[in-house]
Image 1: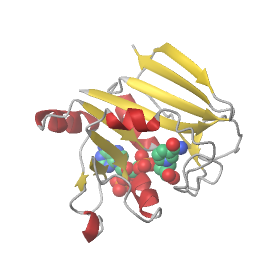
Image 2: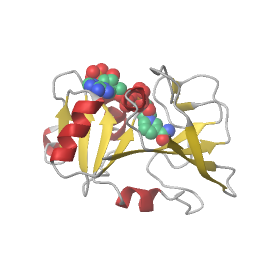
Image 3: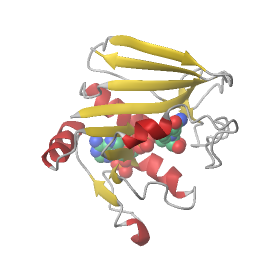
Length: 179
Ligand SMILES: NC(=O)c1ccc[n+]([C@@H]2O[C@H](COP(=O)([O-])OP(=O)(O)OC[C@H]3O[C@@H](n4cnc5c(N)ncnc54)[C@H](OP(=O)(O)O)[C@@H]3O)[C@@H](O)[C@H]2O)c1
């Protein structure tokens, strides 16, 4: 199983404001990128079998209106009671399990590539050293406070730098491979 992260982060390391707002991230309201540049997202998304996200990210996606992942299996992780809206039950699997348990379960279902999304959720996978690639798109803005991408680890995780690309928008995208 290959587990990947593809995420946008402010220059000071946040993925959202404390209240979950993404207003600092151009195109995050579903309007898409202003300059037509998608930073490789579509190409990346096509390579994955299942999108795994935390409950907070799921709740944010619900505010976007139409469900954007109709052609992809989606797992929502939560310790709470399943709160998937009825009309999304066919697209979403609501699960309460640890990252190692989830990887085992999805592997047994034939998945080979998963996309892990949401700060706490990514941190859980990193804690268990289960992330194989991190694609970090740094947005040129400081927001001062917010929901951090990274958190405590059981031990250091060394990252091999694969490549970095900068864009006219000022976004800088770096690919890392944990080693
Ligand atoms: N900048 C970007 O590109 C980007 C990308 C994705 C998300 N975001 C933003 O990030 C924010 C959400 O990040 P976040 O760090 O607050 O949270 P998150 O990872 O989306 O969700 C955290 C929640 O997921 C559940 N969870 C995670 N791992 C679990 C496990 N192994 N077992 C059971 N439950 C598990 C827990 O839910 P329970 O409390 O229900 O147990 C936990 O409270 C949102 O505002 C979203 O819009 C930004």
